[in-house]
Amino acid sequence: MKKLFAHFRGDAFGGITAGVVALPLALAFGVSSGLGPSAGLYGAIILGFFGAVLGGTPTQISGPTAPMTAISMILIAGILQINDGDINKALPIILTVFVLAGLFQVLIGAIGLGKYIKYIPYPVVSGFMTAIGLIIIITNFLPILGYYVENDQERIQKFKPQAEELIMEGILREEAEEGLLVLEDFHETIRRSELISEEEIMNEAKVLANKETSGVIGAIKSLPRALRHINYMELILAFSTIFIIYGFKKITTKVPSTLVALVVVSSVAMIGNLDYRPIEEIPSGFPVFNSEIFTEFNLGAISPHIFTAITLAFLGAIDSLLTSIVADNMTKTNHNPNKELIGQGIGNSLSGLFGGIPGAGATIRTVVNINAGGKTKLSGMIAGLFLLLILLVLGPLASKIPAAVLAGILLTVGIGVMDYKGLKAIPSMPSSEVLIMIVVLLLSTFWNLVYAVGIGLIIASLVFMKKMGDATADKSDVKTLKAETSWKDEENFPEEMKEKVFIKHIKGPVFFGSTSFIQVLAKQIPSAASHVIIRMDRVPYIDQTGLFVLEDVFLELEKNDIHVLIVDIQQQPLYLMKSIDIVPDLISEEHIFESFEECTKWISKNVA
Image (cartoon, rainbow, N blue to C red):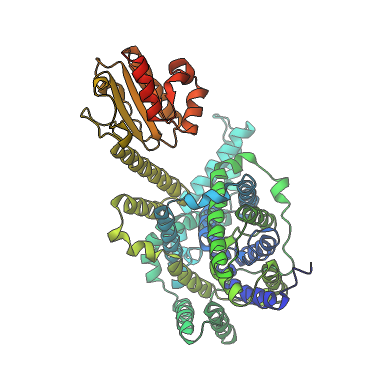
């Protein structure tokens, strides 16, 4: 306890400063997610506090981040559509996915996978981050212009016929499930259809209209109409916010320009009694536990979103550990990656239980904390408690913040999160890496973030395997029928033995991406030969595919009465060969030598 409060002054100032920076972003990410500003604030409070208490990076400040919010936004929109836009029906499913994402993060940390996160290829990360930026920018065009489809009655009216059809389909489906649908008697169907109110039809039409405008493609399709129906007051508020965010940084960076923009523009709008759209109401009081997660649990409704939960877990892990590395560099300390993931996972699960959106370690907020004097976990705890105080004291006031202000903040976040370093490097990057980046970028932006990353990783893995296979083949002498270059210790090999004993060199790992050149080995040995020496000094690793290919090669050689001698095989390949009885059933122990000199002596004695 004494150690925790050893740097109280610095931690207090760092935590409060980080909380100030986090406030506008938490509200903006909450609105962007589709669950409202309170969800962003709850996430920042709960994850921020418990991520600090249980995590493995003392100065880490956690909360909603752009990548996590982008995936959450798509998940929420999809679940809402399935549930006819009814947030009360959709919320337990959404929050359960968030809780699962946190539990998956705990699992990743518990089994020690944290140290492997760093092996995700840069082109995949670069394409993904740039796509996140584009998604945030494009999806905020409409609120910046002040266009909200639920206020566009002319557009909603166009969806009324389709809405009526869907409601009737629902009635017929219910009757079929209840056993009431009889072809000869539609009296019950007619009765129920007459009970459909105009309000029900309009609500369904609004759901359909919202569906059409959701996501990047929906925003792009709706842009021409939004430009014809600009709300200039909303536009002015949004651009004033953007101007202050970028302009105030030129005056000073000691005070967060995002907070200045939020306070100044919102104050002018409130005091001036301007005609603007406020954000959703933020409930006063402490976050409330959502028991519906357990009482209304539906495995069938959750199972389609398991992969998204896993993606959120891994993305949060990457986001957090990258921030941990930044913190290490600034504080000259070392974080505990697996403990950090466990802390983040518990924080995200608790956040989901109380209605918050998931998040991760936030780089900017962590840097601000360190620069302001934060040194221990207490700084992150104070940041979370500070935001809780804001919620309890200023919740009703925060509910009056203009939606256009948060849209302007999000636009600057989208611009900032894009990977300009990766984009600038495109002309000098290998074409395969450019392809990976562009594929991930386009698929993430216009299709599906989750699948895009998976496809990017698959392409990157295939490219890597191809390069490794080519590199192994280029280094190895198992390529052509021509004479191989002798190694230094082979120069004194008896001349009279060279027609009977062939020497082959295998270099590099023998894995499923490099086995094609191994398969030709048996065909390269002339039928006049009686023995082949396979030098495996430089084979550090063999996988299962490579092992079975080598077995096939050895069998083919033995079939042709050519005996295999192996020189200087390393521990891992030898262990695998013994595990499937290549040694000693196919190659006896006496045919395995620790050096080429020993092998030469054996040949001199045993090969006529």
